[in-house]
Image 1 (tube, rainbow, N blue to C red):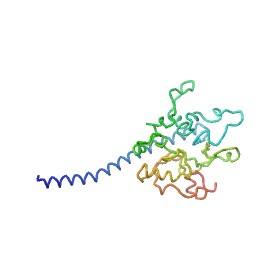
Image 2 (cartoon, rainbow, N blue to C red):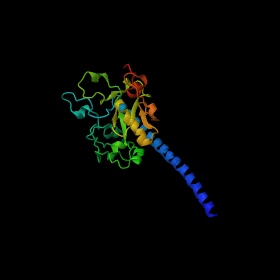
Image 3 (spheres, helix red, strand yellow):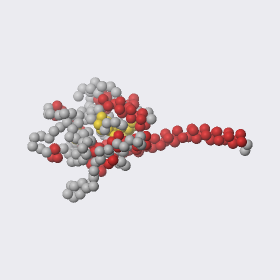
Length: 255
């Protein structure tokens, strides 16, 4: 081969590599999305199992939440098991994490377990978004490498009649949430681990920063999980729009 022919071959190979590399990156992202979607589905199923064992009530997104123990009752007797594993009270530092990972001895004690402030206990678990870790490896708070629970689900009407600092941070009865296939339970969010409709922009930011503008992963009350593009995340007022209300609140807009 002459030098010119060799340079032409090298140029062609360079072009082919340039075409191939983006495709490989996309394939890796699709694989990460599939793995993380399966993980979030398991978290949703674990949450539904927890509800089945606790009076058909979803755990609060954060404990102690909006309720206070009745007079004469201790928090340990009023709130569910593992509600206070970490000072944050977050669902992913307490009851849901406990449902999936904690093992008790015959006396009901938990050994060798500690919730860390920066979420180290989430590393390597279903709660870790491996895509987030790859996109932002300098982030040391693993809560930001995780998921968010939807606090907008319609709270039980009993909370209208009792003292409550935030009724959305309470347990919710599943039978009151009529649109399980439409009602979002968990969704990716790079900032808060508890979200409401007002946090939609943070979820949209997650699509851009975590998935390069592709889709975000969400799990639903019926246990399924899927990826959503920005246009598929309802942006109308949930109190007024039926589709948005079913997604964010689990009920029709007039309820």
